[in-house]
Every structure is written in C-alpha cells, then in structure tokens.
Amino acid sequence: MPLVSAAMEGAEPQAAQPRSDLPVRVASAVVMLGLAGFALWQGGVVLKGFIALVGFGVFAEYVMLAAKIAPDPARMVTSVITGGLYIGWAALALIVMPVVLLVAVVGLVICTDTGAYFAGRAIGGPKIAPAISPSKTWAGLAGGMAAAALWATLYILFAAYVLAAMSPTGPSLAEALRTTRLGMAALAGAGLAVAAQAGDFYESWLKRRAGVKDSGRLIPGHGGLFDRIDGLLPVAIIAGTAWAASGGAGGA
Image (cartoon, rainbow, N blue to C red; front, side, top):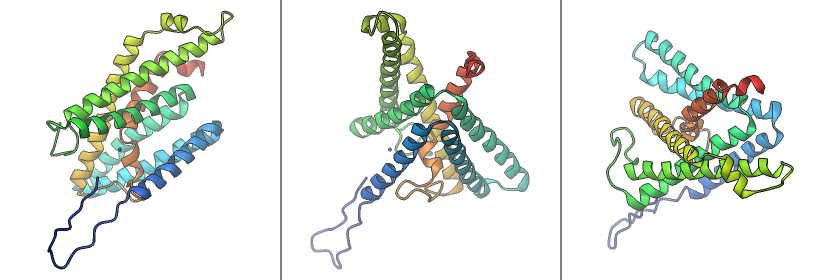
C-alpha cells in the first residue's frame, strides 16, 4: 500500500526532520502477516474465528465512522444495518469458502494494491476521483488490473497443474494448459481488481465524510483494520457468492 525533507540552507531555527514511519509499518505488516499465516495454517475453527474477529473489528470501525457522519438516529440505524450487511456478507463468504479460494481472493487483492501502487507512482497521470482519494490514478487502476489478471492466470494454471499431477498420467503443463481457460481467468482477475478499487474508494469516501484520515488506530503505521481490508470486502462478496451459486457451498 511517502517522505519529506523540509530543511533549507540558512533557515533559522532549523526544524527537525520528520522521522520515517517505515520501520513501524514494516513491523506491523510482519505481525499481521504472521497472525494471518498462523490462522491459515491452523485452519478450521482457528481460521474461522480469526476471520470473524477481524470482521467484528472492521464493523466496529465502520460504526465509529457512521457515528461521525449520520445527522440523526434514524440515519445512524440505517448506516449500521447497511454496514452490518456489507461487512457481515464479506466475512461469511470468507468463512465458508474453501481455503484454495480464500488464498486466491486474498492474493488477488494484494496484487491489485501492489500493481496499482507501483503503476500509479511510475506513470502518474489523471486522477480517478481526487475529491475522494487524491492518490488514485487511472494508470494505477490499470496496473492493479494487470497484476490481478496475471495472478488469476498463474493461480488457475498452478491449480490445474497440481490436479494433473494427481492423475495417473502424472504432472503435465500441456494438460494444465488444455484444461484451463486462462483468458477467462485473466478477465475475472481484472474485473475483481476493479471491485477491489471500488471498495477502497468506498472506505475513502466514508473517511472523507467523517473528516478522519484513518478508520482507526489499531495497527501502528497502518491505521485501522478497515483501512487494510477495504478492497477485500467486495471481492470476497463477489467470489464467495459466485462460488456458492455454482453449487460449491452444497458440496463443502
């Protein structure tokens, strides 16, 4: 998911340079990845409980944002119900989907954010919605879509290769290529990247209306839980609902 030097020669008094929060951000990221990795490795009740706990934390942050926005109790109740449905649906989708799909979804969102960040910084250009999120550019969106498409393609191909390796004929890249629709996987990945960016914009819009920079202060250097998984929520809803609609939930 930037640093400034303000010292000028001859200025008096010389202001102290701001310290970089990069070490704190890196340390927090390591802890977050460690916790998520442990929950994924344990699976079962531990993984489901971890997802539910994170979902509850995100909902709590959403409610605090809504409390700053809603002009009256009736609007507050409506906002809480809306947020509960949105976040609860995403959390439930992540809980019930198989681990292989969970890894695909999380990996896609990470690739989207990474591709958007580097493409946006390298290319720049016109902003998508500067009033909501000044740092988001069309070039960044394109980079995120490309990265997500690449992730989806490689992930599907790898899964097909593993399945081919379990067959009597043994591992075969040719067989994996024959049995996968890589074009459809790339299109799906790019489309889900747009959904991830929409989730990011939605949270940014809420924060703008609430007049806050972060959704919370739980994660040093990163803000709140909502800040970290805003793009994951819509992708989880779409992927989980599509999986359930295809009969996956019945066979789980």
